[in-house]
Amino acid sequence: MEHRDLEKYIPIETFTGETEIDDITSEKKLYVETYGCQMNFADTEIVNGIMKKNGYDITENIDDSAIILLNTCSVREMAEARVLQRLTEIKKYKKNNPNLVVGIIGCMAERMKRDLITKKGVVDLVLGPDEYRRLPSLIDNLIDTGEKGIAVKLSRVETYDDIMPVRKEGISAWLSVMRGCDKFCSFCVVPYTRGRERSRPLDGVTREISALAEEGFKDITLLGQNVNSYKSGENDFSDLLAACAKAVPEVRIRFTTSHPQDLSMKLIETIALYNNICKYIHLPVQSGSNRILELMKRNYTVEHYMKIMYNIKNIIPDVTLSTDIISGFCTENDDDHKMTLDIMSEVRYDGAYMFKYSPREKTKAWQYDDDVDEEIKTKRLMEIVELQRNISEEKNKSLVGKEFEIIVEGISKKSDKMLFGRTDGNKTVIIPLNGSEAGDKVKVKVNKGNSATLFGEAVSLN
Ligand code: SAH
Ligand code: SF4
Ligand code: F3S
Image (tube, rainbow, N blue to C red; front, side, top):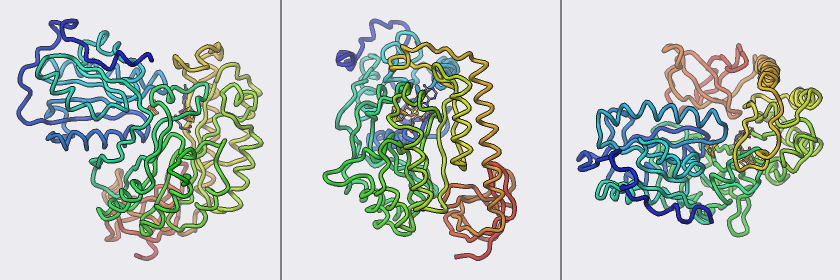
């Protein structure tokens, strides 16, 4: 395998003159900056868990740190460009403190491997998403011998099930239930950076979710690139969701992401059955054209997708829906684009994450011609964004007069006289201060809404 020899340390001799590490600061302080999807944010908490167990302190102040890690994303070129730009800024920190350890972890580490060390002088450590247990030993080795470290082997079994993540205080928590992705959509780098699908045992997840509820978390999101593939013995994702709902009946449970190919009726029914499973489904459609879906290797048609939507809306009438859309995929023409706008108008999503296609090396689509002009990609993306903004606004305005339960998250960022919280459907609601605090459940009546936010007032305190 390509990465087998790369997991070994690279001798420092190759890099003489770049790093002279003697004694790391006596306080072992770690600072991690996270880019990318929720899986990466959850992984940062796992990394913090591993490091804390090994005697490190976690700091949120970069100036204070002895070790800086960037947990990175490769999904689009822009995501990588941001990190490469950040590395040039981090050079300055290293200039001021030559003992500083700089590591790249996550998807870019997995994708670019040794190049990150050879091409970016400032990088001391490169660790892929399945190698985080080796972080403390690679740091020790770097400090003892000056050897830069690289570990990018992907695993078929690693789930970090026994690691207790170090989470930030708050009411929301992420909980990884599976890792990797075997779908190989033709545009997507994730199967190459995250490796094969594997699931945590069901009892490990329910144990962790119970502990989180005890700690006071009120809103927990189960995470996986493709949760429909979750498998633990005879149990599938619906069983896991039901087990979690029963284990912590007072806690709201969400999940992301499902793939339309194998979202089952059982899952829809499970969501409908439990009060504490949020009536919110994120189901990426990517395109409204069957020809493009086929080229994307998504393994479903628009008709199949609409059948799922029909079932969801029937079984969960007050469901909130969101999606992902890519504009300007290879060979996309005006008709394909129009079909994407059509499916958006038909489904009427509450929200969408919308992207311009960005070719990624190694993927199947890398071999296709990226033939849609940049200006056309941008124009189509803007039309998609504008349509979604209008639909979101209409949907939010239609909620005026309705009552929802929100969980208060804190003081509004825009006004210290207001609180903000989220509905079951993941919508942010702003209400005037009313004596309630983060974590409280408050019944609110909506009196205004725009495309992004609802405004209301408390009806009663539960
Ligand atoms: N596992 C998740 C999504 C992972 S990536 C899922 O399948 O839903 C999140 C989103 O990024 C994708 O849904 C897709 O819309 C977008 N994306 C992935 N690769 C991309 C690329 N090469 N260019 C543009 N957008 C991309
Ligand atoms: Fe990427 Fe497709 Fe897997 Fe999602 S399902 S992570 S888009 S390959
Ligand atoms: Fe990015 Fe890796 Fe997530 S590529 S989207 S951080 S799985």
